[in-house]
Amino acid sequence: MDFKNFKKGRGKLKKSVAKMKDQNPKFKKDERFWLPTKDDTGSSNALIRFLPQPDIEKAPTISFYQHGFKEKGKWFIDNCPTTFANPCPVCEHIEPYWEMDTDEGSNYARRYSRTKQFIANILVIKDLNKPANNGKVFLFKFGIKIYEKIEEKIFPESELDEAILIFDPWKGCAFKLKLRQKSKRNNYDNSVFVDKIGPVADDDEGLETLFNQLLDLDEFLADDKFPKYGKMAKKFNRIMKIKGNIEDTAATVAGDKGDELLDEFSDGPEKAAGKEPSKSAEEPADIKDAADAPNPSDDDDFDFEDDSTESTSEPELEPEPELASDKPETEAAAPDEKKKDDDFSFDDDEDFNFDD
Image (cartoon, rainbow, N blue to C red; front, side, top):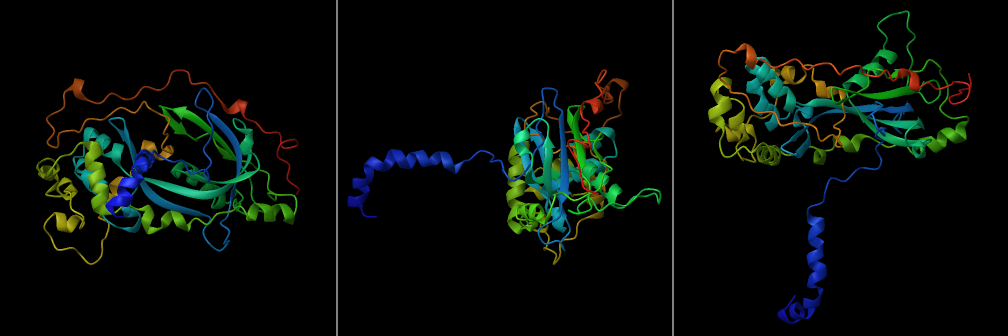
């Protein structure tokens, strides 16, 4: 564009400036995903049916690791590169705190550790809090607790229990999802599969309608869904307010492992530490084992509506002897939690009737 046209277009500047709002978009919800709709108590009840992928030869679920936490009022949500055995700056940051082998260090590391997430296609049969979802196919992201219930139904430990292929549109079964709040987290312990087995639709025409709504899950494992090491490190440093080279903290205990790898380098951890990069990135066993330790957040699905998460201060890496008053207090159980099981019972004869 020459100066003449530049000057001529001056009147359009206001419209051009308005485009700035689109350069920093807020979190955009993917409408393809179903989220349990909570009532005033934070509970949700729904009857859903897990479905296969449109290519029935593919595994019906995909899994990946993800970091999700709220720090100083800002969310950090990123898929973890260790899903594909690639180095992760967040895992490397918390590794020294696992190695402290103290409650304080473990609690700090657990707060930022990765959790395993799963995605599957589902049919929402009955959403008590949002009936508009009934009869629609969605994607559903869930954690390890629900996945364990799926595994238990498909691969029962006891020979007395019948193995049911719950993803089978013809001979599967539905899932009573009961979300409750436990220690201010989403909890699905009361969720169960129903006993009745049958087709998800009355005829082939109905099944084909559902089939045409199924989505392939491979897109969620694509390279662009996982951040590059340098970009992820910068984002993590910014939210955690880590400035410059912080090797003087974590490296003291971790033997020059961990935080020094969070330098703002884009060439990966070996380059950041002044080493030649290896040909293949193997996930360190100690990071993997620690990250897979029981984690309270494994039971939730990153509740963006929960603003109650408090910032956890970083523990000293050379802990002094604990005093009785310094020991972390055990979280008290919620007083007299109301039992919710009785408010969610579907009548098989009226609401959920399969043809045998």
